[in-house]
Length: 251
Image (cartoon, rainbow, N blue to C red; front, side, top):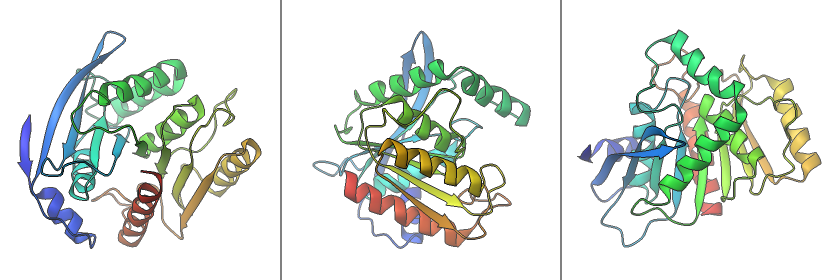
């Protein structure tokens, strides 16, 4: 799928950003360990070069229009944005039970999880407009994936977790983390609460990992997901601004 889209321009303007061109968004397929995956890449093809590359890991319901719109928003600001797939083209969930099953499969097999993250990165590096400078980000399940990538020692320029699952799996730590980590989290998140946040910050301090945590008072889980019962406009906008500051610093 190739499309010229103005959706990103509208969304970026809604967040107080300026845009000047139409964008190109395109689905692409790739393989990791014999499984076919389908991602989405967005960029402004009028630019001689982009500001850098942002990889987006999807939530537990798989790669949807939500991640594509976030990619469009970043492309409108001059980045090459790649929404990756860690479930598989023919393995997209269609209901809550399947969401749990797909995410649970990767939580239960961390080596496969890491292989799909690193394989997606390598596939993205072969796309037009993708730069050597890369930041990986994700929402909810994708936020947990960003932290998994950080613990794995993935050699990129930064990791961003939006309301992600924060607990560190048994046997893992942040000793191999090679780039700064940004945590964007609501104080009223019932999935990963203040105790989990304190724990992960302590682990990063112990490992000497450069990190920052931006907290949004009263924000619950999924505070950035449009249309969800937890959506919080102020926290969404503030966390987006924090992301852009991080990208400006790292890319």
